[in-house]
Amino acid sequence: MNFFSYLIETANRLPEMPACVSAERTVTYAELLAEVEVVRDSLLQQGLRPGMGLGLVADNSAEFIVGLFAGLACEAVVMPLAPDLKEQEFNRILDLVPMAAILHDGSLITKPRFVQVAELDAFEILVRPKEFHCKVASGVPRAAVIRFTSGTTGSSKGVVLSHRSVAERTAAAAEALNLKPGTKVLWVLPMAYHFVVSILTYIRYGATIILPDTSSASHILDAISAHGVEILYASPSLLESLTRAPNERTLTGATRIISTSTGLSPGTLTTFEARFGAPVSQMYGLIEVGLPLGNLAPAEHPRESVGIAMPRYEATILDPEYRPLPAGQIGRLAVRGPGMFDAYLAPYRPREEVLTQGWFITGDLAIQDYTGAITVCGREKSVIHAQGEKVFPEEVEGVINSYPGIRSSRVYGAQRANLDEDVVAEIVPTTPSRVDLEALRDYTAERLSAHKVPNRFIIVPAIPLTQTGKVLRRGWHNEPSSSH
Image (cartoon, rainbow, N blue to C red; front, side, top):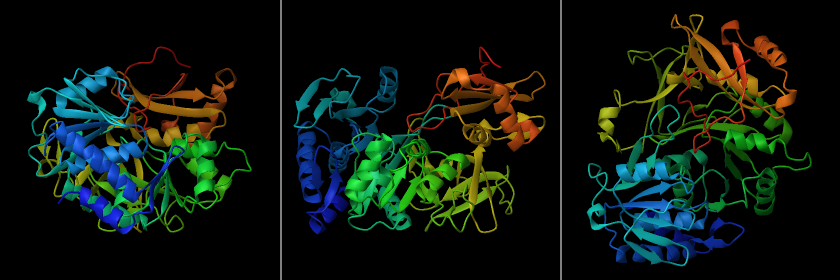
């Protein structure tokens, strides 16, 4: 099967339904299919063949959707890439993946040396030399897409999904989200990093994707009001920015607020719900698995949890020997279900070699209560060992970020000679000259056990983030140059 067939079905069933709405234009499903077919034919004319690699570089737009489906229609292996990738990052990907061509909408910063250029109305096609016209991910039958992980704690990995896996995953996501034809979803996250259980799912099931002019709070609230948005799918940082909008602004009509991409701090959760009177549902997503967990019934589960296993998925907590732990004990979060990834690309590792007893070990430490609800404590690799106890940076950051005048923070462990670690916090105040570090220390001490309270607070201009908005946790054991 080819996932492109789902667009054909939706366009035939809902030809006049808007597929994507932006300030520039509204594209119906019939128009979307017609545009995809034009780009598909051009790619085929340039020599793109089944199994070859196609890089897609486009901003959040209808063009991204067109390019994604055009590549799938060619049976190429599509790899969306963020437009703002630096030259070194872009070249590294080119070294790992022998892409035959790149389709871009003009937003590509780095222009690699390709031998041929074809111009379309909305795209430019860059074609590589013939030696790159080979199959990528040849170990995966009918490979469809490649997406690199965000690399919060190390080098990112290319994740390969087949057409079958994409079909299984999108079906499970639509069931969890209760998508219906015409459901209006406001989309603000980078499409290059979020496109399977979101963009591909919405198009398969006939939803309408609303794109605001920018990701500013005012433009988002304008779009919600103007288009009758039902689902707001956003990151915690975006939800936090919405809380600072003028008091008269509301979430008119939006009934489902979904937070994803990284953990939502209790402070932001409380502030958002108090400000707008709308419950926030946290969902736990992984490029390797999809959307296996969700807190879609916030009244039934702890507010800080990511909820329970979604329909068709299973989740468990395992000890270091990969044995199931009883409720109430912290361990390794493992999940499994439909549409799991088919392989890692570089180095190549098929799914069967990665899974443990059929489970995907997420790298997160978590705890499950007696109702099945799961609360993520933090990344296993980022745990700090202080005073003989484990400290989760995410918990400490949540407290620090709730302090008035703190924009963001990053907590890490600085090694001591005796293998113990100091808890160190980098902070970004809204007004650096006015932050009282002693008062901040007292604030954290009132809310955290003594071994979790940072030994040092360091004012920094910004916290490094991954492309998906997660705190970049690499290089934590480098000593900072100045501290308090």
